[in-house]
Figure 1 (spheres, rainbow, N blue to C red):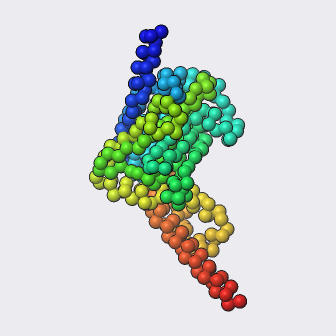
Figure 2 (tube, one colour):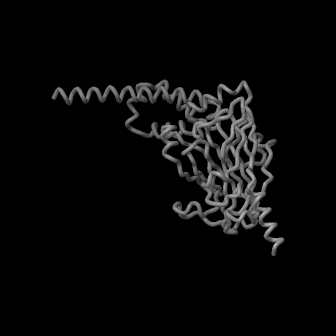
Figure 3 (tube, rainbow, N blue to C red):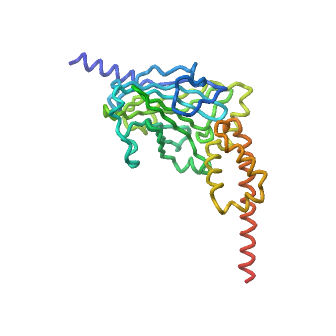
Amino acid sequence: MKHFLILGACLAAAALQAQKYEASYSPVTPKMDGIVAQDPAWEKIPWTTERFRVFKTGAPAAVETRFKALYTDDALYLAFECMEPQMDKLRPEVNADEFWNFDVLEFFLFPRRGELMHLAVSSSGLTNQEMPGTVTKRTNFMTAWQGASKRLADRWTSEVCFPFYLLGLAPDVRAVELPFTVSRYATPSRQYSSWTYQKETLKSTEYYGRILFRPAPRERSAMIRRSLVSPHWLSLVGRWSTIRRDPSWKPILSENRETMLAIEKIYAVPADYPEHSLELAELMAKIEKLAEKKAQTEERRMMKRFFEE
């Protein structure tokens, strides 16, 4: 019995050691389809080697989970492989209110004080999030991120994209760390596990590991710094999708047809969004500024009419 207690204490001590993963710059952006194998962006990126640990006990998880990470000019990308010998027993996702009880990966990102983000992607690619008000305020509600998954015979894989604009931090010519952990719920084994040993709740940041961004190439530094002040194309595309369907925007778009057509040209080719992100940001800023100016003019007109009458 004494030997078992000592072994348990040693396992817990090992599990409590701070986990770290070093993410390097990639000139190639992953294809966000949930398929990790044969994607050139992921080809030479190493997988984590640590076993995920069962929530609170620290014991090795019944099913293996591993991930890898890289970053581009504007975002952090992670790829996951979730082994599952009982793929036919994955619980069907029938109730969005119980999202956390399906086969999911939950991400806990803590880039700034008061900005603990809780995001999740399921084995079928559905996403969910719990975003602090401080983040929505800082980003002016431009909080888009992306997740995709693929179910295979004996595992499911996922890819996620977390824009630097959302995180509020980005690598530079010096190393930068992101406090982070990820947990997995496997419905066949009914087991929660995580990359870091979470002795308490999954929101206990003191137990988090670190994504360590290796220094960025000097020639990419300006582009990466710009990503902190310019909304990511994921948010811009989402915003444009709303604008183009909103009847109240038609007069503005009609008056600025050249800008509208330039945005539509980019919008029509999703595969080229990363390449045209800066152009899209500039075009969208122009449209938003014109809309704001028009709104101010209309407000002044209405106020003048109100007081004159």
